[in-house]
Amino acid sequence: MIRTIAVEKIKIPADRQRTEFPKLEHDELVESITSLGLFQPIILRNGSILAAGERRLRAMYDIIARGVNVRLGDGTVLPTGHVAYLDFGDLSPLEAAQVEYDENFKRKDPSWQDKARGLEKIMALRAAAGNPVKQKDLASEVHETPGAVHELLKAARLMADPEVAKAATAKEAIKISERKQKQQDQVRALFQAGVKSSADSIHTLVRADARDYLQTLPAGHFSVILSDPPYGIGAQSFGEQSDDHDYDDSYEAWQGLMPVLLSQCFRVAKADAHAYFFCDPRRYDELISMARRCGWNPWHVPLIWDKANGTLPEPDFGPRRTYEMIVYLRKGKRKVFQVASDVIRCSPVQNKRHPAQKPVDLYCDLLARSAEVGDFILDPCCGSGSIFVAANRRKLIATGCESVASAHAVSMERINHVE
Image 1 (spheres, one colour):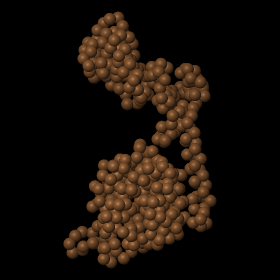
Image 2: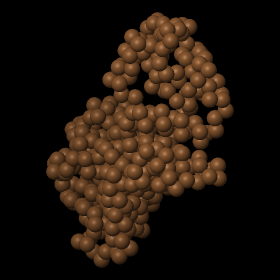
Image 3: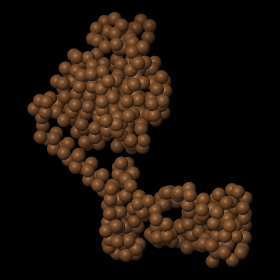
Image 4: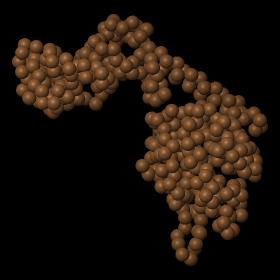
């Protein structure tokens, strides 16, 4: 029996199989219902939960918002703000999934991603109900070839990887996943085999000005960029603390470096990538503004490196400096591989070989959030080479650039270490 319900009372489950609703098709359906009427009611479960007909419901939202009254196929005019529905009663979750699949995917070709999720859901619900179904039988039920169903279900299991999920077809998604797995296996094998000298390293280290070197790198290559550039706070003028700072840390030099660094790093980053830049609190706001102008999407707040101990710049007048800031930037929709705190507690390096040397454990913490085995990572201001040691521990392939000869030499010495 056809009934009516106010649209605001309808609940749409969060795990609906169809997630894409192209605007052109939506507008055509709105026009059709407005001019010809609603010939097919939506289907609800338990009187209010949508089971099938989300495209029609979305069209009705727009029509109702315009103040238009819709009639049914028999000429009956629906009450204002209402939509017609059929109640399937207490459909089981499996029945609801099958109804939704029929509604969405037999009549309108969806994206392969939605189709894969839908088939995976039906398979899981069948298994949970103690009535597992073979892929060839499922293929017959949904009018697909067994090969297509096998391909879609295989791709569904791989979609946690954003790069895989964005593939144009299920077949391409599987190829991308297999290529990445092969790359990861090759990297693992290289690390297991070991290397005897820096000449054998899988990493790349160059001595150059980062601004010049970055322009030679290919676009869209690196998954993660992690760097500790100069802070632009005049560290070379800090009395005894400045003895080892053999680079220009003036504010003017920083202003000349960072816009180029950020824009070039954005260019060489993959479409979905993360970046981490250490910075001084006095430069944080300016650095965030620069990053936005270059296309990056900055995280809402800085990450904090809690050093527990730190410098005491003016012991007679102020506290000890025990933390540093890290700017976290995103490009595209790369997801993190682990959820971690925005405060990282890690002891500083005791016997530094570079005035701004960062602990390897700190780099490993950041890389664990954003990189997986075999990823290409970049540090355009690699200093003493902590990026390489961290890359060896995490089985990543690192590229580093350093302009200061003494720091470059230390990086070269550490390039194959795991310490």
